[in-house]
Length: 71
Image 1 (cartoon, rainbow, N blue to C red):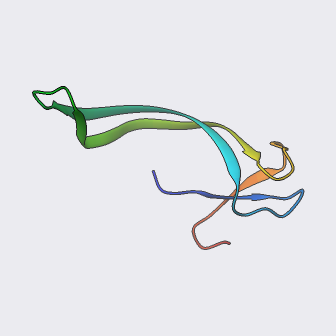
Image 2: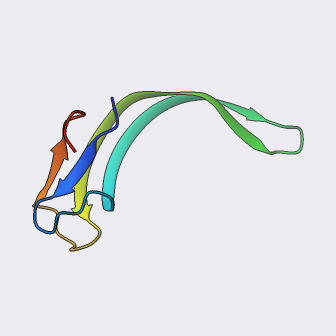
Image 3: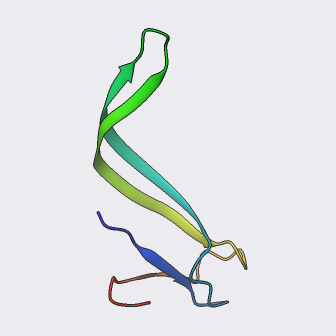
């Protein structure tokens, strides 16, 4: 699961998007005696992008994912 870039074909935005995702992870939770939490060794088991919308013009239907070489 790599980093994906997006582009809004409506306004040309390449930098600002609202992304809704569902992620299932496994992680080691380490609590101090005082109750402070540190999350270590987090692994992403499954990840699904549900919706991407452009922050500039507000549309979601015109946002496309770019491949690593594009941009």
